Length: 109
Image (tube, rainbow, N blue to C red; front, side, top):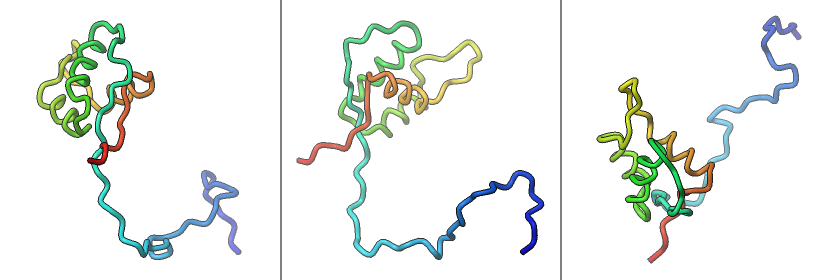
Protein backbone atom coordinates (compact mmCIF):
# COMPACT_ATOMS: atom_id res chain seq x y z
CA UNK A 1 0.00 0.00 0.00
CA UNK A 2 1.36 3.41 -0.96
CA UNK A 3 1.91 6.00 1.73
CA UNK A 4 -0.47 8.96 1.67
CA UNK A 5 1.61 12.04 0.91
CA UNK A 6 -1.22 14.49 1.54
CA UNK A 7 -0.25 16.22 4.79
CA UNK A 8 -3.81 17.47 5.29
CA UNK A 9 -5.47 14.05 4.98
CA UNK A 10 -7.27 12.82 8.07
CA UNK A 11 -5.39 9.92 9.61
CA UNK A 12 -8.37 8.01 10.95
CA UNK A 13 -10.97 9.07 8.41
CA UNK A 14 -13.83 6.70 7.79
CA UNK A 15 -14.21 5.38 4.28
CA UNK A 16 -16.53 7.51 2.20
CA UNK A 17 -19.63 6.21 0.48
CA UNK A 18 -20.80 7.23 -2.93
CA UNK A 19 -24.36 7.87 -3.99
CA UNK A 20 -24.47 4.42 -5.56
CA UNK A 21 -23.55 2.84 -2.20
CA UNK A 22 -26.17 4.75 -0.21
CA UNK A 23 -29.34 2.88 0.80
CA UNK A 24 -32.45 3.74 -1.15
CA UNK A 25 -35.74 4.41 0.59
CA UNK A 26 -38.29 1.83 -0.47
CA UNK A 27 -41.41 3.40 1.04
CA UNK A 28 -42.85 6.55 -0.48
CA UNK A 29 -42.96 9.42 1.98
CA UNK A 30 -45.38 12.29 2.12
CA UNK A 31 -44.12 15.59 0.82
CA UNK A 32 -42.90 17.66 3.72
CA UNK A 33 -45.13 20.62 4.45
CA UNK A 34 -43.33 23.95 4.68
CA UNK A 35 -42.49 25.06 8.21
CA UNK A 36 -44.47 27.93 9.69
CA UNK A 37 -43.35 30.74 11.98
CA UNK A 38 -44.28 30.42 15.65
CA UNK A 39 -43.67 33.41 17.90
CA UNK A 40 -42.74 32.23 21.39
CA UNK A 41 -42.28 35.57 23.21
CA UNK A 42 -44.29 38.33 21.54
CA UNK A 43 -43.75 40.78 24.40
CA UNK A 44 -39.97 40.93 24.03
CA UNK A 45 -38.25 44.26 24.62
CA UNK A 46 -36.00 44.92 21.62
CA UNK A 47 -34.61 48.08 20.09
CA UNK A 48 -33.33 49.25 16.73
CA UNK A 49 -32.92 46.77 13.91
CA UNK A 50 -33.84 43.82 16.13
CA UNK A 51 -37.16 45.45 16.93
CA UNK A 52 -37.87 46.19 13.25
CA UNK A 53 -37.06 42.64 12.15
CA UNK A 54 -39.03 41.12 15.02
CA UNK A 55 -42.12 43.21 14.23
CA UNK A 56 -41.95 41.96 10.64
CA UNK A 57 -41.54 38.38 11.86
CA UNK A 58 -44.57 38.75 14.16
CA UNK A 59 -46.67 39.66 11.12
CA UNK A 60 -45.92 36.16 9.77
CA UNK A 61 -46.89 34.22 12.90
CA UNK A 62 -48.61 31.05 11.67
CA UNK A 63 -47.56 31.64 8.05
CA UNK A 64 -44.83 29.82 6.09
CA UNK A 65 -41.25 30.80 6.86
CA UNK A 66 -40.61 31.16 3.12
CA UNK A 67 -43.19 33.96 2.98
CA UNK A 68 -41.26 35.86 5.67
CA UNK A 69 -38.02 35.40 3.74
CA UNK A 70 -39.60 36.62 0.50
CA UNK A 71 -41.12 39.67 2.18
CA UNK A 72 -37.85 40.61 3.87
CA UNK A 73 -35.95 40.21 0.61
CA UNK A 74 -38.33 42.54 -1.25
CA UNK A 75 -38.40 45.25 1.41
CA UNK A 76 -36.09 44.71 4.39
CA UNK A 77 -37.43 46.22 7.62
CA UNK A 78 -34.02 47.69 8.47
CA UNK A 79 -30.92 48.41 6.38
CA UNK A 80 -27.51 49.10 7.97
CA UNK A 81 -25.40 52.13 7.09
CA UNK A 82 -23.53 50.14 4.47
CA UNK A 83 -26.73 50.03 2.41
CA UNK A 84 -26.53 46.26 1.91
CA UNK A 85 -29.58 44.52 3.33
CA UNK A 86 -28.96 41.68 5.75
CA UNK A 87 -30.32 38.21 5.08
CA UNK A 88 -33.61 37.26 6.70
CA UNK A 89 -32.26 33.76 7.36
CA UNK A 90 -29.67 35.22 9.71
CA UNK A 91 -32.23 37.23 11.61
CA UNK A 92 -34.61 34.28 11.89
CA UNK A 93 -31.75 32.15 13.18
CA UNK A 94 -30.94 34.80 15.82
CA UNK A 95 -34.56 34.87 16.99
CA UNK A 96 -34.59 31.07 17.21
CA UNK A 97 -31.33 30.95 19.20
CA UNK A 98 -32.69 33.50 21.67
CA UNK A 99 -35.99 31.69 22.17
CA UNK A 100 -38.19 34.38 20.62
CA UNK A 101 -39.47 32.39 17.63
CA UNK A 102 -39.29 28.97 16.03
CA UNK A 103 -40.14 27.15 12.83
CA UNK A 104 -42.68 24.39 13.41
CA UNK A 105 -44.64 21.96 11.29
CA UNK A 106 -48.07 23.29 10.35
CA UNK A 107 -51.00 22.03 12.38
CA UNK A 108 -53.06 19.29 10.73
CA UNK A 109 -56.61 20.30 9.94
